[in-house]
Length: 282
View 1 (cartoon, helix red, strand yellow):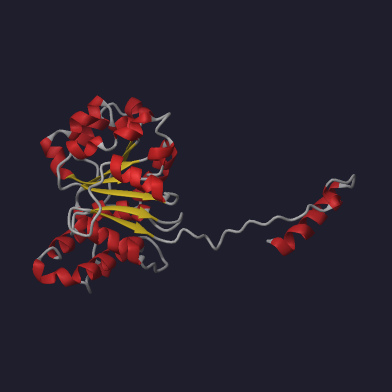
View 2 (view 1 turned 45 degrees about the vertical axis):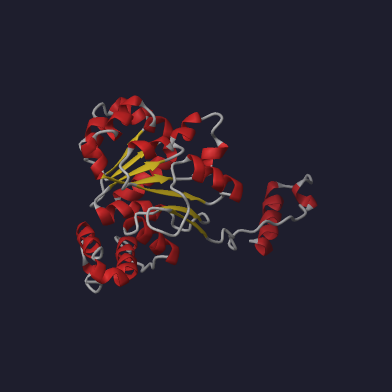
């Protein structure tokens, strides 16, 4: 089963995941998830990429233990690939809550490179230009539904969420940049309503939150207000995964500015001095 995954079409990965749910192969679940995620990471890429341990651990908990996950990891870690991969691996819909439409556009582009994925972005612009977008969402035409907390709290979208057929199709609620729930709650109160989705959606739906800057105090508030289940190591509980957020590739230097930059010299001399100045510090 695992040996076939590197050459398997993405659309066939859910079948492999379903086979791994059998109790007789529970011990292979981690290897199956790792191989499937590596297949997704390398889709359309010439270079070979290997998934991180925490990415595999998170997806395994979300898919097989149906547990919520709060992941704190540095920028560039690969947090977004987790909620991109979830729908590809399960054939379930992901509701991805985003703080800004600009980030939604970027995520939309990333997800669209997977031919089996059908993402959409719901914001004021798309609702104005695509009058039937909510009807298409309700019909289950999209695998990834990206929207802000304001759109998620509208009466029209809440009506879709309460539809039994649609509820059965939803598998994951992903909260991107979840530290903003606390930081922006005063001028964007819709962030505080995210937790209400838990009482609307089916109990099988899992929560995934991620951030690069969530401190311990904010972590507790997010867990209490954003719809996460109680923290624990059992199924249907929330696991908090913290990784190092150090960025060794980023440095801050304080260097005196040479007088030539402020002196009355020709632009040529100033440019030459600037290049000389940068060389030892780049």
